[in-house]
Amino acid sequence: MPLVLTLRESPSIPLEVDAVRVEIVREQTVDQVRATLIQHGNRREPLGEFFDVSGSASDDQQIVWAGDCSRVKRIGEKHSCGQMLIEGDAGMHLGAEMTDGEITVRGCAADWAGAEMRGGRLRIEGNAGNCLGAGYRGATRGMTGGEILVSGSAGDEVGTALRRGLIAVAGSVGHAAGFGMIAGSLMFFGDVGRHTGAGMKRGTITLFSIHCRAELLPSFHYACSDRPPFLAIYLRHLQQLGFALPNGCLDAHYDRYCGDLIELGKGEILVRRDE
Image (cartoon, rainbow, N blue to C red; front, top):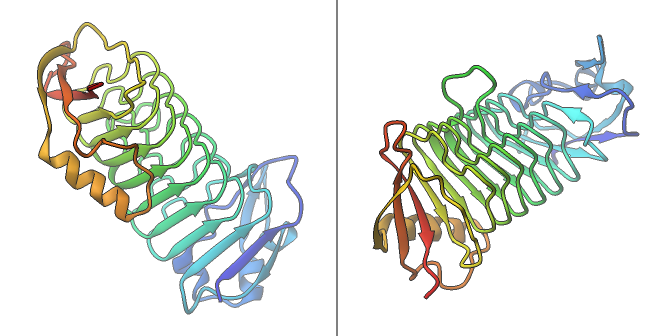
């Protein structure tokens, strides 16, 4: 039986629960978990003041967050083992800097989900906010490993300064996706906003929707039309994880654009051809 944390009511002042981590609570009793100090505004208060606590993470290393957690920040920050399940929405900084394990959100996630992530897998079944998998302001690199899978849409600045790893979004994404991207892979299956790939040095951004009318920056130059073998590997991996793929994307051809030529220029944007 997992450790179940049920929020009694949505707080008017956001909570920060980065102190609740699988590797810690699996060694604790229910009373010790209740006594864990979390941030409530400018005060530190026991977790039990806001959550009902039951079960244990000692066997299956799993934490379940129940209730409306849209104002609960930093769930799974620096997550390094086991599993977390958020049964509803999650607040800002979900899974930020996580290194291993898996976090699943049944609802939507706010801004900065998976920020500077280093490993593991983050699955969001609803929508994600801005700065998904991005580096924090002033950081020289963002996400350096792991996978983020979003079944809905995402906001602006997805994968800013991405260094390594995979981000896949089934729906639309906002502006400046892949801004300052260093390496890694972004896979978008819906519409994209303006300035996609601006300032990218290396890495791959793939646009799979035949209805996507992306306006690429003039600093990206057409190179060729191709069917890259590595895409099939990624797509089959996503299929194995239950990620819904549009028809025909495995056999499609893609127009390749190299850029951003105002930077290193070794990146690429692959745009599915409407055949």
